[in-house]
Amino acid sequence: MSQQELRSWLRLTSVPGIGPERQRELLATFGLPERVFAAKRAAIADVIGNKLTDKLLDHDAEAGIRAALAWDAEPGNHILTLVDAAFPQSLLQTADPPCLLYAKGNIQLLNRPAIALVGSRNATAQGNGNAEAFARALSQAGLTVVSGLALGIDAAAHRGALSGPGSTVAVIGTGADRIYPASNADLAHRIVEAGVIISEFALGTPAAAYNFPRRNRLISGLSRGVLVIEAALGSGSLITARMALEQGREVFAIPGSIHSPLAKGCHQLIKQGAKLVESAQDVLEELRWDATSPRLAEPAEEARPADEASRLLSLIGFDPVDPDTLSVRAGLTADSLFAMLTVLELEGRVERLPGGRLQRIQ
Image (cartoon, rainbow, N blue to C red; front, side, top):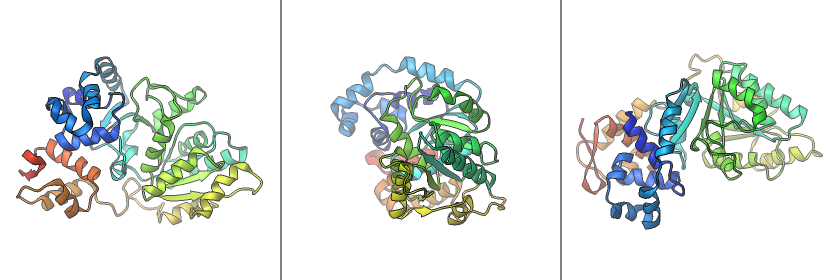
């Protein structure tokens, strides 16, 4: 991707009040971001309304764009858009993927089989020990452990995962240039060296309460399942578990004492159908994960992106087709279809015709 193209992605995703859903609507209508900004104001307003159109076109994002490009140029830093091959493919199968991610570290981990471990910030010593032990075992088995770099269970999960080949992904609720909480600074540096930290929030974004529930959908979306270790009723970990169910992921929970407030959230999940687990092997068996398999970095029984693209081209055929018809043919959600079509369009294999129809040109 050229720097000019990346500038357009950064501009699109930096406007206050225009979140991923509106961004995807604009991309679905006009194509790549530069086409959004080349469109007439009235055409944009037909999609997102006059008020948001004014925000989009009048917002001065230049300072933020320059800062992001400078950050991206630093070793180990990456800005990934949803048309990049390194963008997490599992997020494209969710209802609300971000259009852009900031990543610091080994981005190859973003497309490896993963399991999320989450739980209380105020965990007991036993809970932290369980989190570290489970994460270590799952990482040793080749699964990448995803968590949120919070205190308590999250931090313990990252520590345990770093000791195995699966390593770890930390999804944060601040800008990728900030570490929160500050007490996890050393752990964050270790993750950057052997794992990866990602954020959908613009650089400089401070810790804000409403950012963390949004980042939870990425924790579950990156993973094949979510394991909850110690969570009180009303815990943010239960939000992650609910999102996992909505995304079609497995949910696991470790039971605890009936007298412990930090066990009540896990017990509630188990009552609602979460899998009760007592060992990492329980999780591996439920996921049907073969730790001795040589395909540790490959999702089992999933089509690779290149295969999916070839299949989609064959379904388009050589006659113009509208996106709704193609979505039915391919059995894909609108967001997944859009992401794949954008890649094909960038490669010059598909052309967008007047009226929104698509034409295969290769």
